Image 1 (tube, rainbow, N blue to C red):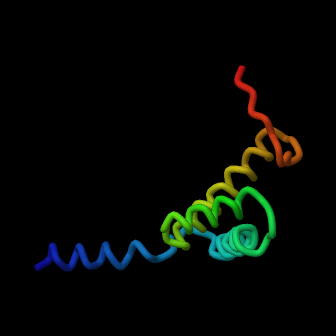
Image 2 (cartoon, rainbow, N blue to C red):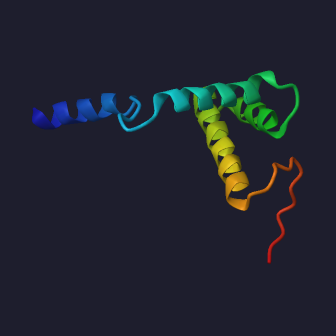
Length: 93
């Protein structure tokens, strides 16, 4: 009985936002990803979003991937201390 309750609690608790997360920043990041993926006419993230949705992926999971790509881009710009370049060529050492 307790094992069943534990599984139910795990199932429902996974859909919630972490208590440690800054919900206002997550909301802004969600709006940025939504804007880039659905409202911007051209761009690599819109192409990525439309391609994945056409493949049959869930829209929310694709939007989560777009959010992750935005975060990766932001941290790369901060770490390298460079301006964002749309057509950046990654050169191996």
